[in-house]
Image 1 (cartoon, helix red, strand yellow):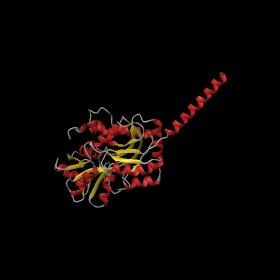
Image 2: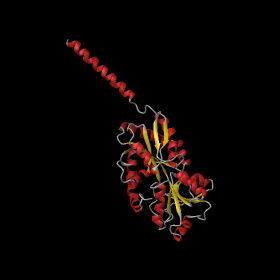
Image 3: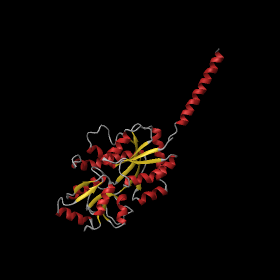
Image 4: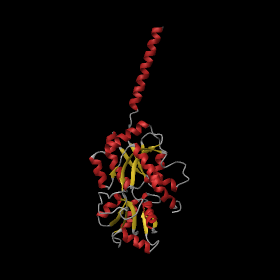
Amino acid sequence: MTSRSALSSRLAGLLAAAALSAGAAHAVYPEQPIKLIVPFPAAGSTDLVARALAVDLGTALGQQIVVENKPGAGSLIGSEFVAKAAPDGYTLLMAGLSNVFLPYVHKELKWDPVDDFVGVGLVADLPNVIAVNAKTPYRTFGDLLATGKARPGGLSFGSAGVATPSHLVCEMVNHQSGIRMQHVPYKGNAPAVNDLMAGHIPVMCNNLGGTLPYMQGGQIRILAQTGKTRSAAVPEVPTFAELGLSGFDAGLWVGLAAPKGTPKKVVETLNQALAKVLATPEMKQKFARLGAAPLDPSLAAWAERIRTDRRTWDPVLKSVDLRTQ
């Protein structure tokens, strides 16, 4: 009996080990395509960066990454969709600076646009610019400021929507220069750019990637750019700092985020694949064509960027009544 009992125990142990091994093999991530939500319309800079990244990152992970646009409410709709998705690594967000802004706009939210995500890694930085229709008389940033001071409230600027980076960069211009341009929000960068080129609005703050093709085509003139140094894509355009305005060191960053509670191993797998892809010359070239630069994808860099953004933008966000615009 003892021998038979011991044999049964050993057999049960072997079966259990085999079951665990099969389960572990079955749980290898990723097993199916991954959905990457872009909370802005198609053809904007966040969308273009996401689509440039998705092909190579999907190859590195061995699964297709499907980009899906869920625009609206300054990235709120797409962000909320991902925040409430299953935390299994199969629904990711192309997050960014707009997530830092959202709590200032929607104070009644029962979820947090920053803290209800786990950072997978920063992806790219895009300088923000202030641009004008090429047919306007504003050839320099000084020309624009002179008109703004001579006609308080007489200039309007377009943006991708309330509390988006393109909106708040122009609000920072108002704040730092003492002029008072009026905000005209759009549902995304692309329709605002179209109206800028058509002459319906004279000024727009936008990311460089979404503006560069039209500057190269002669329809738009870029007057100034954010950042500590000039972007290699537009070395002839001065930074705001060079023009005497502070607070414009940071550009528009985008990064991958997953719902809070996503398993650590899944986050690590995604992070390692992201780091591998961002280091390739091919990815750097793709981003360069969009006026973007790869960022440090480490998890520590993500946390530091969030802290810095909150500290930098808090005074501006509190000075603008974002809820009534």
